[in-house]
Image 1: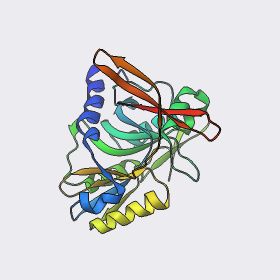
Image 2 (image 1 turned 180 degrees about the vertical axis):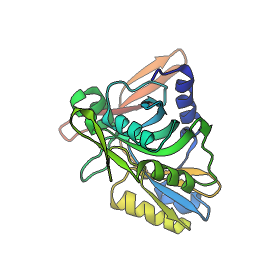
Image 3 (image 1 turned 135 degrees about the vertical axis):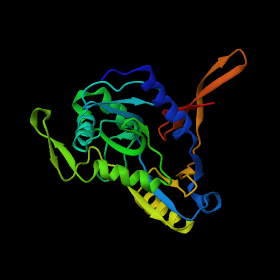
Image 4 (image 1 turned 135 degrees about the horizontal axis):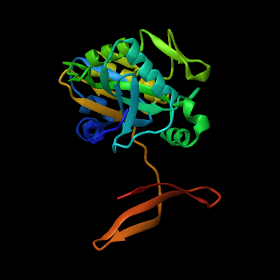
Length: 260
């Protein structure tokens, strides 16, 4: 499938207008910051946001800058097989690209490592979480439970797996293309309990909360850290950003990020 400028712009716009506007809530302030009576709570996955485009039996995915992910990916083949099996002619679906971990939560850095190493690419998985378009029409839902129900219909009832030579056959389950996990809640107290179960109990990165008014909150724990500035860049106005590091007991510094 040829990637067009219109496709790139749709991927950029989704990040800018939808995913980029989730309200950020600290886990300790759920009851103070979140309101409503009907909630859909999904497990937040630490991966890379992708918009997956499907048409004529083929699928490609673009990141939030509109850049195409190149190279053969098992999870993308399985995505396309699902669409074909369900009779979908075209679709644009937002998904998290991640690497599943046994006994621990996924980590964003694993995705970049797997994309850079052809031997690791078959470890990548997709977790669809939103439907942007389906068969050429915007997918409009009154509440997120309708979105998740449709994702479950598309990806969970019939599944696919790979055989040698990248031939695909239909089976009952697959970990390579599965909708994000979701639970419903009828009160903020129940949302709090889901957060405690998934984040505090199981170590998940966070949760995403959808209420009946279509407000979306991204809930994560707050962590504090003592860091040292080991470098900086400047403009004519002064300091532009700083390079941060932590100091180990042996005196070595480990760089971990930059900030404004």
